[in-house]
Image 1 (cartoon, helix red, strand yellow):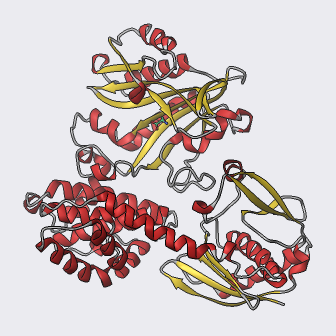
Image 2 (image 1 turned 120 degrees about the horizontal axis):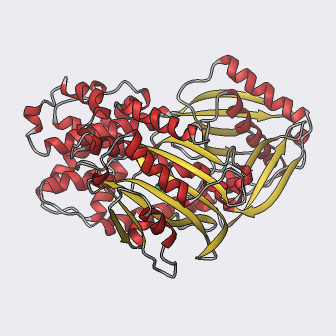
Image 3 (image 1 turned 120 degrees about the vertical axis):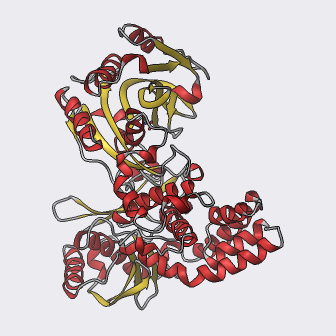
Length: 553
Ligand code: SER
């Protein structure tokens, strides 16, 4: 069975068991400030464990691409990946909702899928359950179910770290797990959300749910009886692309050859997936992770005398490479000098980051090849100090406003309309990257890979004016940040938000929310007060970021 066939089989199996097939969520979660990326299939459904009536179906099945950066330093070994696909089945609202299910069905179906569909021999399989701990009782129910399965001979109890799953966030679901293993490799995690993390502790929840996740790449590795996740067909195409180049088995034997090849395979796949979703490399949050992936790729390829365009044609990646090439050589020379002195301080590593764009991991990796260790804590200290300084200067321009006069307030509301309209005209990938308002004009930066066409500019201007003429009310509501995010409100400066935030909402003529932004304000009461809106210029601000200058009169 190919990986494609396994995915189809998984979907079909659960569809036949009454699950609705849903599309995967974006790798870039839109309304969830608690994470940078989609790291598990359940993430897009988190809310449904608490509010099951909002779920599109009580039973759902997905194949969710995920990005996990927690293990990024391990990538290069035989099993760790930054990007992978997770197959999962889910149930919400047990026991009240008709069709909901819990431990018995989830465990028995997992067994059925593994042994009857994938035809894994029973004695290769084992399972674990939660033995209790930290005030949570042993999962006897799961143990009893596991014991009824004929042919499952190896059942083991495990503790909190292995068999309890929690996001550790206020209001989020959590619970004990059952894990299935093939030949001792964990392949399927069945989470039984029967607790909710509230007021800092786990409380029993009336409303229970199932969240399972099986990593496709790892499953294929064990099915093929391989020890290396990269030795499976998931990577065949990428691999042949690479071995057509100069990274042949011969020079793979050179320093860290296999490790480098794995990093290339993993990072290329992850970077292309992220860039493919419209993410732009930057020095912040998600964009910074993408930047790190690309820069590490560039440096490793360089060891083989290769350029990044030999392995990808992705425009965002190529643009980042071009940008980096300006400082790469100078940075490497600087690093060499430091390496000669056999010592690199945290401050020097920060300088390499600040002046030459070398992410810390990269400096550490290059230094460690020469046997030099760098103090990460000192680097982090410099990094935090720098962030504080730049945040203090940003705070002067609260919400992008230099002063709080009447005309600036009108501009500020126009800014919200502009963002909402751009998302309509250009697409949901548009994110505000900066805003600056004076009494003369507004300057608005947003992520978008190419120049806007004359038509798009015209349409944007017209739509903003239409919303102004519609005389729409601007409403403000204070709420907890989590609720604001859950409601779909957008916002950019997450690290500056407190627990309570103001959400400004503008509904269109039919009462449908048109713009909802977390924002410090101030705003006018009705869009009519803005006056006429005119775009003066649309230009590039930096790589992947466009800038609009507009006036109101
Ligand atoms: N949420 C669990 C995991 O990520 C199961 O899907 O492992």
